[in-house]
Image (tube, rainbow, N blue to C red; front, side):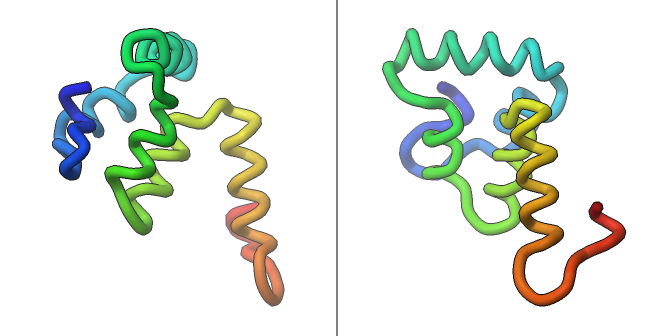
Length: 86
């Protein structure tokens, strides 16, 4: 919980935890966080971050199929599409 404190977050700790682990390791971390704090890690991170940074952290936490779905949605949202993202 050191990276997510309820008063903002320690960006260095958050990035070091979320962006340096495999998806399998992150899933174990999500389960351990839920068990220890009775809260969803993704929701906690979202509440402590904002804007593009929050999206980046959400992508880091997402399962591979969720990540791909989010990228497709973002690429096709609005008028036209981002063909490079697709």
